[in-house]
Length: 222
Ligand SMILES: NC(=O)C1=CN([C@@H]2O[C@H](COP(=O)(O)OP(=O)(O)OC[C@H]3O[C@@H](n4cnc5c(N)ncnc54)[C@H](O)[C@@H]3O)[C@@H](O)[C@H]2O)[C@H](O)CC1
Ligand SMILES: [K+]
View 1 (tube, rainbow, N blue to C red):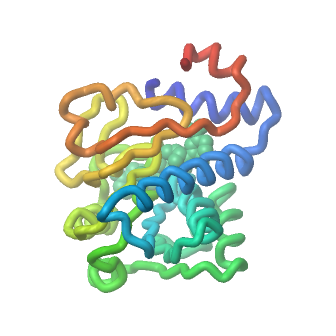
View 2 (cartoon, rainbow, N blue to C red):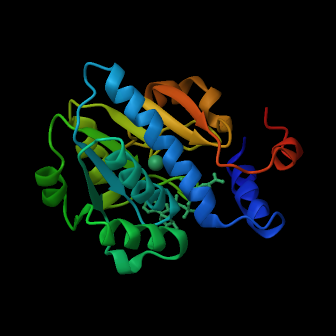
């Protein structure tokens, strides 16, 4: 699916089917957490603890849901947000607040030094930095976070798409998250089939977010 189509699915599910964004985000995050747990259990590099890198939008919001569900699955999790939590809005803000009230470990990374200090070398790193709302190459601290993550030797999991990869063209940016696994929502993105995308995607798994079959049929999603 094209970026704009998958964002339309989200919008129609809410505006025409009356679903709540929080429900879509919960389905997305719970499904992603289950795939991450499965990968960590079956891979020799699958470390526990898990570090979740969260950006400013709903891709970051997914990260707070993933953290809550990974903890329920027995993982030790910590969250590095690249923005102060009061900068979050909507469903992302709601889930960051739930995670904070639940006592999940959340640190706010303000510099590359923070990222270097707080991302351990052997933990599993989850990319909830930028998703379908990204435009252009990851800027500033987002580029730093991707560079730091790529240096670690643990597993790397991208949520919805690897930060830096253009999900319509499959073109990687100068700095792109190199994932072992990409968990993507609703359907594979059009750019994932392009050869240039392969080194950055790793294995791709699709997670449904609970939108009605009728809506998926309208977008010809298998
Ligand atoms: N139906 C679905 O697929 C669902 C998707 N979900 C998740 O939501 C994200 C999309 O969320 P959105 O808030 O629209 O965008 P992002 O989270 O990607 O954040 C974009 C945000 O980041 C800033 N930004 C944009 N480009 C850059 C850049 N190059 N460098 C730095 N910063 C950048 C800007 O502020 C943007 O606003 C989707 O991917 C899924 O993960 C829902 O959770 C469930 C349903
Ligand atoms: K991402």
